[in-house]
Image 1 (tube, rainbow, N blue to C red):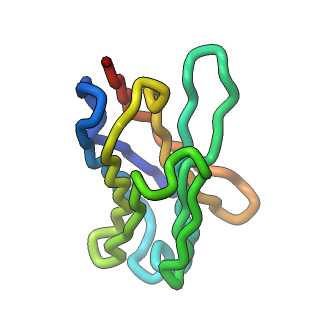
Image 2: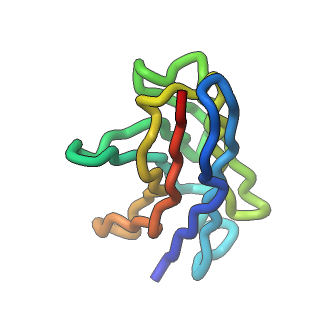
Length: 118
């Protein structure tokens, strides 16, 4: 079964930047390259929400709250997806998760904590 592992979270002052990484394993290069990969986040007491997603054709979409500040990208050769987060705000504080589907089954990573202080 496909596995996803996130990294790159941390503690950052408002206005700062972080780059999150998501690496996939137990999947071939060709298998990874056709998948849509999403970054989600969940803040305490809130529902998990989609932050950004990237398709196999590298088409992207973003939540309104992060448009213009976050950029999602992928490296199929490395089986990685990145989330570059700039101009971070305290409301971006959350656990960030990487997601894809394996057949009809959603696959989630363990998450990486992002904390933004003012």
